[in-house]
Amino acid sequence: MLSVGSQISMTAPEKFVLYYVRGSASLETRLPGEIRSSINYFNFICGNERPVATFNHPMALYAKAHALYLLNNFTVSGEALQQANHVINRSQFRGFLTYPGTDQVIPESSLSKLSQLMKQLASLLRHPPSPIAVCRYDDCYKENKRKEIYSTDFNFEGFVQVSCHWKCVICFHIKCWTKLRNETYEKKRDKDVFTQPCVTDGCRGQIYKISIIDEFEQIKKHKWEGNLIDERVAKQHVKQSKNDRNFIKRRKSMKEAKERKLKWRESNRVEELPEENKEPEVLKEIPENKPLKVITEQDILNA
Ligand SMILES: [Zn+2]
Ligand SMILES: [Zn+2]
Image 1: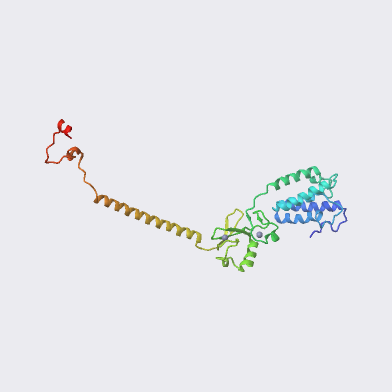
Image 2 (image 1 turned 90 degrees about the vertical axis):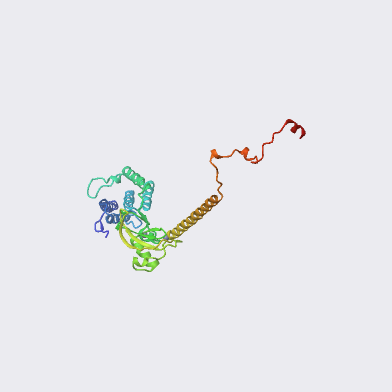
């Protein structure tokens, strides 16, 4: 595949430039597949398999870091950028490189221009975009080099969202989910995973929904959705209805107590005379058929 310059006798810098320009052409397309292939060219001139051992320039490492950034591999992009910095600090780079067969200077072969580009990339790497999901398959890293899922990922076709009825929502790369389903549940179809234990450790929920989410974070496809009764919700309902029953009971006994009180009052009610018919208290104390006794001063002295 990497046959560029293999049949032509060239100096080490010429070979370096030829591979660099070929890789840059792929990178400039901004197509994920082409960007991936550009990394092969850059690796060839700056990686461990570098056949052009007698010549190196940090612009190849910068280009690799840039390609990795465009593929959302931010961590490894940062590592490549650090390597480029290391090469700049370690070696002397004088003059410029030109495009093959021309006098036209490759701008980033100038260290000042390259430093400027590297600073821009470092700034972007300090605030990388957020992923739309993170894959929860344990061996995902082996497959994808990272667990973060971006809608701009190479061959992105959506991601799988698995829901359990205890409210876990777990995301996977489509391939990772297929592997996990086959390995953990030993099931060939999503439909068969319905009611299986939740993927989350310690969760006693059951899987009831599997969907594919698109780049706009909308449901692209419902793969399977069950209709389980949420035990926790059911328990809440029981508790609620129990509370309701207690309330009704309490209200009934309060009503009965009130009625009893009213009945008692009714039976013990004292008829009161209207204000104007009331007998003066003083007169009530005087026996009716007895005349008033007149007390004289002598009576008082005799007492
Ligand atoms: Zn994954
Ligand atoms: Zn769960």
